[in-house]
Image (cartoon, rainbow, N blue to C red; front, side, top):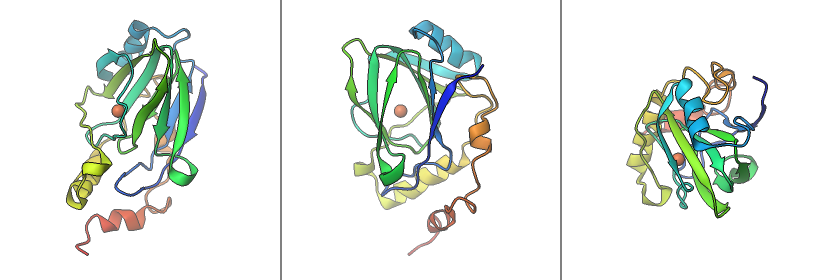
Length: 189
Ligand SMILES: [Fe+2]
């Protein structure tokens, strides 16, 4: 399958861990969308624990227990994401588009069509948590970062079924300038 894929990098931002893996936006995965077709695609690629719902949370949150994929089944919506230069980027998705959201990246719905309908999925059917930066202590932040670091790269991309090439190609924490951040999680200062 040849898809147009956008990639967005991120860096730790306040008490948002973000990720050394790029956030992926696959365009036109399921032409025309449709919740059933999108959830079937996710599930066939091992991203289960699926839901479909009229949108996603309208407050900024991130997940520490799992990566997440989000597909637009119907309508359109705009995300505010903790990625890109300066830390925040708005991304609009339309029916048939799929976002692969690394654990640690903050996201919220900031605009949407009246008929918006979204689908979600999680690698190996993991359960998700919902962490909001404003309620996070320094200790909880460090624990969340450690959980994120322990998550494996999923076997398959939820949209393409490929072996997550963008994430396996991501530079190590040493090569990408994440070393000081990683060390700080274990310091007592
Ligand atoms: Fe989410």
